[in-house]
Length: 525
Ligand SMILES: [Zn+2]
Image (cartoon, rainbow, N blue to C red; front, top):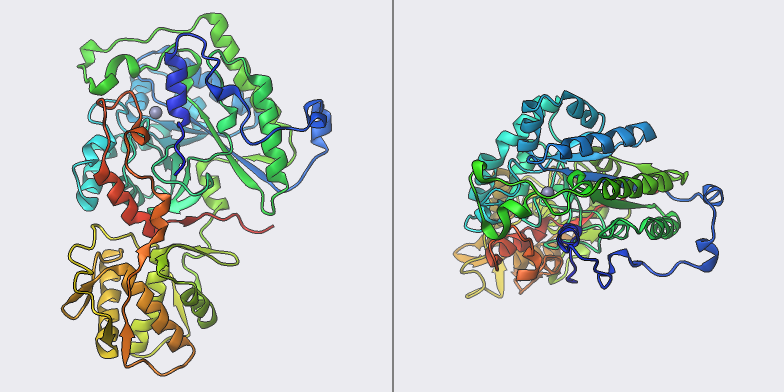
């Protein structure tokens, strides 16, 4: 994966660099040059343009529970947007919501409530943060620990704002795959954030059972520079993005974010307290220096000017996390797959196991596995039904395929293979995941090899050919793993982590969940 800084890392860097840093290309154009004729274009001119829908997810990490002035910043942003008829998503930290309550800021709570509330952890940067505490845990225990540490803040938000948060995003780049398992159990459908751990061409995708609006490329060029003086360039960048997306068949999605505290602070609230693993007691917390009145006004002018600019395009729609979830509704889930479709799905399986994109739906590798295994298991039992329903996205294996492959047979009898398919069907129903190994009698094979064999058997069955006497077993790999970053210090670059933090274990767990990865598709127009 391409290494780039996340916008959060950039924001931290920008605000911490107390000097102007012209070399940092934040204000420079991303996404190609704009033609001269477009540069001179007037606003009225733009209104005449229309095309495919351009969806804009605007979100705010609302997290500073130290500086009371950040409450007012959040309120001003929320009220401005309400006045503009724009709904955004405010991802609120549990402690921030509790502090608003304790400070009797019902006005701020009411202003935020007019938008959509997401969740942004219980205490954000207090140590240990998510990736740290998850880095020593496996898949299931990690999900339980996430639940133990983060659930109370989620419940507080539900109580304070009157409904359960619709999305989640990690603090900084403190990402962990186990969070997905817990979040889905909580009924959260959307992961809304930024980072480099997983990504699919910078566009929305499904991973870990959630819709991920994560690491979206379109929108990163709308970020403010250090002194928020790049409004004109940001407007031009949006116009260019808009032009590109309007011309796409189904349109596209732009995602960009701010921190309310960023409008008024010279440095981040957590950087002065929890940097490099520091964890002072509450009595030792310090407040960050603030921007001057003129600097604050400049920041709000940037933001308000940019929103007014984006709003004027007739085919732009601001959408919240839950609206994005409805837009990108997974067309494969609960769908009945007929034999003709299953034959095509089986035909597309190769030794490089990955997701599939069909006419109006996409399938993760684990979904392909479940569909084809159900079909083969049925044929070995009472006979194939006319169609197979995909109930859910099975998770990837919870651990590597220890011991598999070393004495992998080159073929196995149909009798054994068919009995195994029934065993695997039972495993998926019980555990809602792909097994880490598949037992062909006493031989353990990797699930990738099993899926490859499964696809050839399924094809034969669907073509009404006689079952083979022996099924060939060959090596296969999870090619979808290429969308998961390799562990490195750079993907965990966040000043709150202890120096040098990284986690090969978390990235190994993340790669196993590449079984659940697939593109999120907008419906055809
Ligand atoms: Zn945050």
